[in-house]
Image (tube, rainbow, N blue to C red; front, side):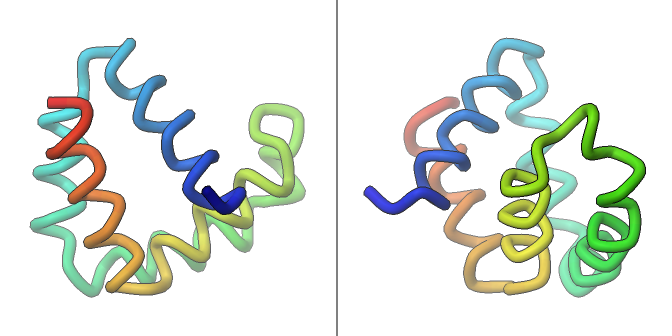
Length: 83
């Protein structure tokens, strides 16, 4: 498993712990191309959120949101393993 997938699983576990898996899936599915804008927000905010989210994790998040195929793959992971 590559490091991105490992990080995705950590996020999914965190979302499950918060009880927002279904909400996350819905938001990612309906957002469509807007996820690319969200990726730019994450890139821009990295210096501000580095105390909250390690740089590597925020970079992986931004890259996932920036790539529609990766976003769909993350949604698939949420649906198959955490729902």
